[in-house]
Length: 129
Image 1: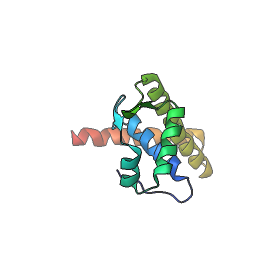
Image 2 (image 1 turned 180 degrees about the horizontal axis):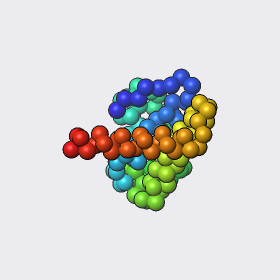
Image 3 (image 1 turned 90 degrees about the vertical axis):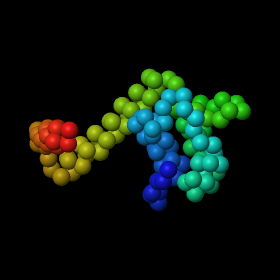
């Protein structure tokens, strides 16, 4: 696991986002064990207190659960994971829309560009198969 940390965002938030992405993409499946504070701190070369804070926030959000004496696990609540996935998708879309607005594109132009890009991707996928 390797994260390129941005100096503008607190490290615990960046680690939280990384873990959330791992869950949403299926690299960490519901019910799977998460590395311990020490393991993750060592692997990411950050202070264990930072990882502890990350886990506390993930628990507060209901994404991670602690089993006393056994460690931390990804929540098994599929609804929570779908909610997380939709939230991440909305963030990406808002960033896209804001960026395109800043470049002066209209809604119709954005839709056209998006549609063209999706068609182009379909074509590439067909060629690869």
